[in-house]
Amino acid sequence: MKPKIANSQSVNSTVGGAKRPPRISIGHCLGVLPFFVFSGLFLIGPTLILAYRSLEGAEGGLTLNNYRQLVNDTVMSAYAISIKVSLTTAILGGLIGFLIAWVVSMGGLPPRFRLITTTFSGVAANFAGVPLASAYVFTLGRVGLVTALFKFLGVDLYKSGFSLYSFLGLTLVYLYFQIPLMVLTILPALDGLKREWREAAENLGATPIQYWSQVALPVLTPSILGTMILLFGNSFGAHATAYALTGGLFNLATLLIGQQISGDVLHNPGLGYAVAMGMVIIMAFSIFIYSILQRRSERWLK
Amino acid sequence: MTTTSVKSPATRKRLVSGLIFLVISLYFLIPLGATFYWSLRGEKDVLGFEAYRKLFADTNFLPAFSESIINAVATIFLSLLIVVPTAYWVTLRLPKLRPIVEFITLLPFVIPAIVLVFGIIRLYSRPPLLLTATYDSSRVLLICVYVALSFPYMFRSVDNGLRAIDVRTLTEAAQSLGANWGTILFKVIFPNLRVALLSGALLTFAIVIGELTIALYMAQHTLGPYMANLTRSKVYEPSAMAIVAFAITWAAMGIIDFVARGSSKRMVDTE
Image (cartoon, rainbow over the protein chains, first blue to last red):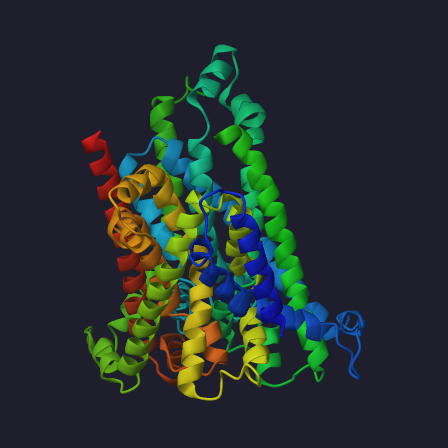
């Protein structure tokens, strides 16, 4: 039912938009129709059905009951850990990524370093999932190479409380794709800083610290914040890496939804839909803030 | 500061930069190094490529790998077929639709894969839209979902490509020579977008080839679920698998960089 509604809407808007320019026939609209049909059937429709089911009561009728039940220990702690991991990796990934971007763009290194960094970042940002989880098991797992190295040096990581399958471990793993994403999105912003600004500041007697704190950083702040929010969403919605690392048994919002799909672990299908929609709402909110900040940063950096 | 130091500020800056670069590089290279080391340990007491040999000899590996490749190629073709006309028409004829199209291309970032597959299963596992009844129909459904997920990458690549060429003049020139829309699209627009199409395609390939979440819950025997299963059942093969996956991603991204650089060089040359 739902995707049909979405489709008819998009068809209408296609036709509506087509009326304005003079030499346009229905044939031209066929060019954009498949795009709207696919988006409706495979993106919007599935989300709308979850939204509808999350509002459906056990005995039919529309209700907010499922959303009220989100406030229970299992769901809240899953959300809390997801948010904690995402905030930590967004802030750390943002800071470290910014540092690398600064180092390769204005740190006085040969241009080759920048080239290597952007290419590698493109790879690492897309290297999430099972292979990344495996790589970390071989590095910091119980028999990982670095774990063995520490043991050789007299430090037993796992006896001193470290585990790859914990908040700390997950954070370390997620940073592997978070930092490169920051590098890739913040480098263009750093390139947008105009040489004249720096020269003007220096001519007026500003120290490098004054230039950064009063000129460069204020201009860059919307980009940095915006990208950190993007990183937050990137980590919040991540499922594959955490699933491969923990076998799906860690208490993370995405993993909880996975368990709910395999077998109603929450013992309440309606609640499962509400958990999923809660994620969409948080993601939509962060992407919304991101696009506002992005527009603000474009004002200066274009 | 400078009075106590013999080195000039520029040299010091370079030194600090180099040090930061080195430390962060270690964070990125150690996991790869460790994985590579383990992948060479497949045979007792000797370093060699035994783990890779075993991986490729695994009866489930090649079928999963080739199925993922076919899925990825099908996704790329369908996605190109849908996105190129859309981006073209939106640029040339229907600029009013641009905000709507751009909004839709944001959706894959708003809807996490795990939520999307949840909705897909609920929507397509019962009549009237029963598409998960057989393995093959699920596979078609999976490819369609991948196509929708590739829209952001494809649209952005193609849109950037269209901005770089003068679509309107090219189209009008072709029209005045009597070309129809099909000819314009396939003989004029597509060839001029080669670089943009290739980077969109390779990015899609890199994402689809090892995709786990959606394939897993749709019970598909593709590379993602295979890899996840491998990490639980084998000791050395997962390291070889991770290295192979990394090499594939690297190859895809490397070609994108290479082609993009080549084309920008050509543009400078012709100018």
